[in-house]
Length: 476
Image 1: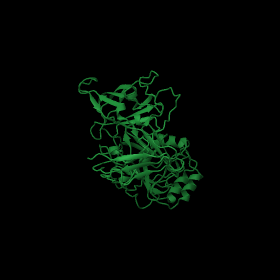
Image 2 (image 1 turned 135 degrees about the horizontal axis):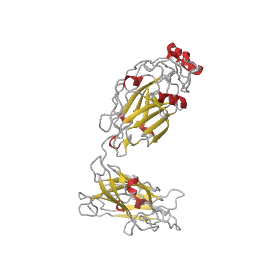
Image 3 (image 1 turned 135 degrees about the vertical axis):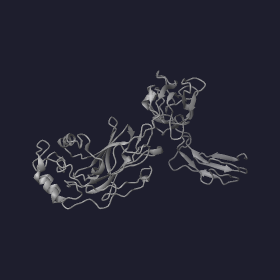
Image 4 (image 1 turned 60 degrees about the horizontal axis):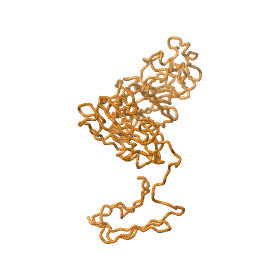
């Protein structure tokens, strides 16, 4: 490689010019301007990365109107700032508490008390993770150093450390570890005012943050779908309680989708706008991991999402209720780092489901696989046979006046399926709702089997699901 022959000329009006002479061959140069923060960079096409710049034409940079300064990264702290940054939390919490972190740990999150200096936050030398070797003790010759790759957004007060030195697709093995975030004189994380980390918590900057923690046994078991409920935000508390006492639902979650042939019996309610899914263990799940595809409505939009970590239950509320439609409820699997449902160890959802023949929990025993459950919704279909006919109207009429507190008996007994608005009583309103939907029926086609690329997981092969009709649940 030849030596470079280039000059930079600075003008008093702010212009910058690069001039090139002979030589400049066998190069792999970076040509452009940078603020020095690793984010604001302008490279010169045709020059940046060119193998030869022999006697190349000059390159000039002119300041945009109103710009008075470019160059060094500006000081964004305060000269009167006397409070050093500290680490206030870690993810998982067991790291910061010097306790136990979940098995197969792949990332460590650090939350600081204030925004950090960007170059410091992104410097790998400011972080160190050491694992006890085969002897199980730290500070001995068989210790293992695990490389850490920090990820940091400028202006943020959090850093994510990706753990390296582990097998592909896996995390730290079970054992004892020591994490150090440096705040000393040789290398340190600083805040925007230049104050070093108060890692030892004595109120003065300049101390290292050190935590010794353990990692539990690796979790190789993937999460599964343990239950699914259809629900309506307009359902009354008495209606919900009736679902639970009669064994077909839960007073909090709604109507429990049954397994086997009953899975695809039509849901007769006019206001089904919420679906809940319980998983077999704690998971990371997001609103976008759920899709409800239909025939009459291709993709039902979601209005809100919530997750209860105590019950492992996720709730998706739709923008509007499902009308007469065959739908497919689908959950993405976060396999191999893709977006989707995964447990706290990173195992993707084990979601395979055999429609009209499956049983909870879902899956085939291996991580990965989109959960795709077929459901039918036909408001007014009190006998759940896939069409609204005079028979449905008759069922409601003969039970008018019955309620969850006045159930009656025989063919005129209160039924949750006749109570199509879910208010806990059968009235003229239910009769009118059914009558308004007379002669409607489910679509003849099934929802399209869409590619798993929608979720970034492996392909969906949706099993056939017949539209079974049965009056076995009459009287509920």
